[in-house]
Amino acid sequence: MEKLKKILVIVDPDNDKDHVIDRAILLGFYYRASVLLVMNKANVLAQEESAQSGLTARFFSSQKQKFQQHYQERLDALQKRFEAQGIDASTSFTSDKNASEALLRLINSEQPDMVLKSVQNPGRLARILITNTDWRLVKNCPTPLLLVKAQPWVEDGCVMASVDPMHAKAQQNALDHLLLETTASLARAMQLNTRVFHCYFPDLSTMFPKVTDADVYIRKVRQQHHKRLLELINQHNIDEQNLVMTRGDIAKTLTHAIKREKVNILVLGALSRNVVEQAIVGSTAEKILYDTPCDVLVMKHSLSPS
Image (tube, rainbow, N blue to C red; front, side, top):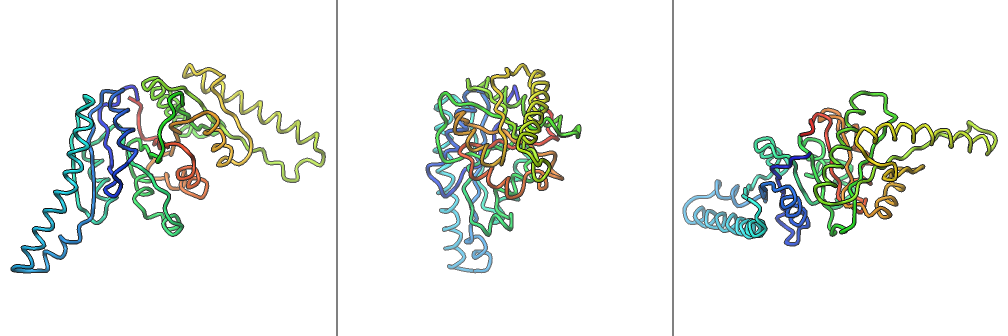
């Protein structure tokens, strides 16, 4: 991701203080990228208008125009903020009742280098059904998707990739390389630090009757993982001191690492659009995407680094 030429920003129509705008301004400024500001807000008046006639129909038509004008004015004001920073910006407003489908159509049409969207913690029902816009974008967005949390970046923060070099599949290995290339590029362009996170979880269960045997096993597992990590990061000129290795539950240790290392962006991977649900959607993924105190960049293996 050395060249980030076009950024598509999904603007929350119900949030006047959307942190995604601040992120987009930073990325647009550092990469000199153009920005497309996109907003979708379903309009029930459009449905009512088609079912009416005469004076009532004209009333609904007038209200529909005012509805669109209100949100377009918001987009126009945001566009001026970008242009004031020397960033080329354009806007697009839609009122489709199926927001995720409308957004995905636009993404596929515009083919941006990155998509930005603020993410909010949904209710339990939305998590169970996995039908909200966030999850649909995570599963189907063909380009890197940056999910933005409602908090500012840390000035001396970092970009951290989460990798697993122990995978035997070539696809996963290729994905790890893509994550590291992206992480290093973002950190370099935005003058942030680079970190590489890996969590190992040795299965102790009833394998060892003695604590000393377990300690030896854990040490050997750590050495094995550390060796593979070094082989991986050396290919990207990343120093060993930038490694963050943890043991235990990934969601908990990852959250601790994010706070300790002052992570601004966590870079995660999913193998492809076809298996992304199995790869990153689940209870652990929900905790990582929604509960970690930093932005999350989701990458797909099908992407080729530019």
